[in-house]
Image 1 (tube, protein in one colour):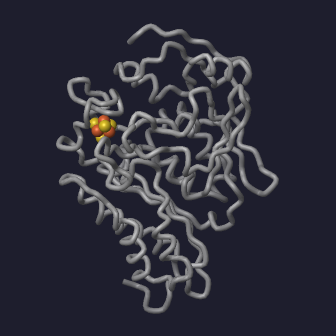
Image 2 (cartoon, helix red, strand yellow):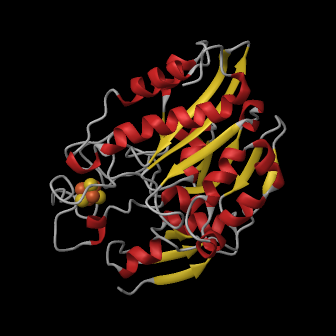
Image 3 (tube, helix red, strand yellow):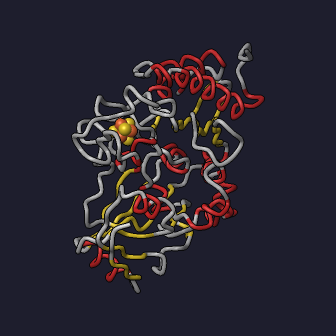
Length: 333
Ligand code: SF4
């Protein structure tokens, strides 16, 4: 590990000053410190933000919730308001990592965690995320866990977060602050697809600190679910995952939110599928058509082609579960 300085920020202005001076924010450290040990991340300065007053989950005037950036994952998943009003979010957090990691990991850090593509840490081979211009070993190497949507010839790494998939479905808004002021970013604009610059992973400016995530009021979200498919029952990243919220009225899809994980380079809002679903009869045939529309532009490699079918089946299963007894006449498979 390389030498670095460490300071614990006593208040937000001090934290923002430190970030503006080049320090990296340190939350639970569950990803950043690992990557520093692997010599992938090389910050010269860290500013610990866990003492800041950003650890609360508060009501918003519109009936939504404001989640502070240093709320621990385990606290978020246990919050009764989150569990009842946004079950997809609580379920996504509980599907991620171990209890010990959730006790340490923060909401802000979760959103900025980096891909688990094995080549990111492998200094023996090229990785455009670790070293821009060095190539992408995953293209012809191990890529079973890689993305099939949002990829480029420079990087096919899947985004690793479960929580972020739920937040994409919930139309969350990310509040960021800097010495220049406060900015609010629609969640789906926070993460950047790799394009020609896979090492630039978000739209955050270098001096900006995530301070909160806001969940707008969404009665629809009470009927929501996160379904994760993985190689083993726990402590594994998603092969594919689906975050969905659904309202069926008179046999038709009245409202729907859908996002995918494990299959894309960013938390993937499934807008093509939503467009097919909205107003259509709530049948398995509709669900299948919607899933197929979303995966139409998929660009799989030989070892991750299975994800294209797997995620479509997972979309259908999740929507079927949320539709429950309200599947339209003749809608059962
Ligand atoms: Fe690196 Fe991305 Fe290629 Fe993985 S997929 S080796 S993270 S450039």
